[in-house]
Structures are given as C-alpha cells and as structure tokens.
Length: 124
Image (cartoon, rainbow, N blue to C red; front, side, top):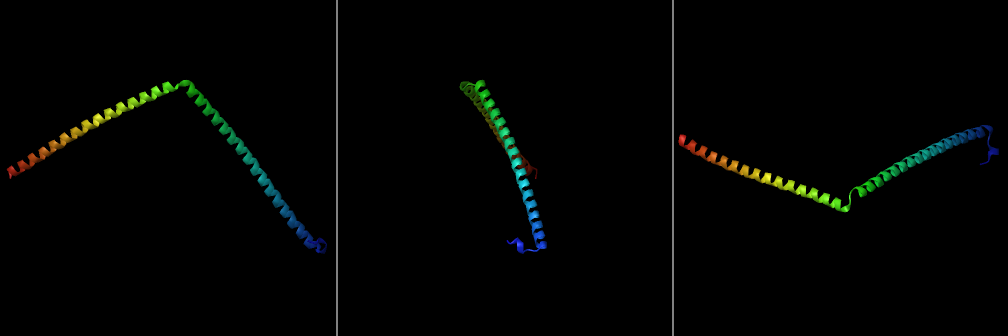
C-alpha cells in the first residue's frame, strides 16, 4: 500500500483502524494468556488431586496387605460363603413350608366349597 498517495484524512482513518485492530489483538492476546494461566492452574489442581488419590490408594493397599494374609482372606471368604449358604438353605426351608401350608389351605378351601355346594343343593 502506498501511503504517500493517500490524503491526510485517509491516513488518519487508516491509523484509527490499525489502532482499533491493535487494541483488539492485544485484548485477544490477554484473553488467551488468561486462559493459559487458568489451564495451568487447573492442571496443577488436578495433578495434586491425582497425587493425593494415588497416595491414599497406595496407603489402603499397604494396610490391606499388612492386615490380612492370603490364607486369612480365603478363610474369611469361605466363612462368609458358608454363612450365606446356610441362610439360603433356611430360606428354602421356610419357602417349602409356606408352599405346603398354602397347599393345605387350598385343599381346605376346595373341601369347604364342595360342602357348601352340597349343602346348598340339600337346602333347596
């Protein structure tokens, strides 16, 4: 662009446009830098959280290894399974008894219905 062929008014207008453009670029650069700083802060925050969680996990794992040997763990699991199986067996026994009781009640109701039908015919 040849500035020596432009009038004073055109040069002033061009300068104002360039000044506005420069201000806009500066504002955007500031915005980008602010976002970069914010991102760095968040990354640092997340790194600290991850570091803390990793430390807690390692501590928990260490405590578990110390507290129970594999044999103790297996014994405990076997005991829990045995208790669970006993509970299931007892529940099955209760359900079987309930089913038998319901069968008896159903038979009694059928007998009552038959007697009612018989008596109804005799009364007529």
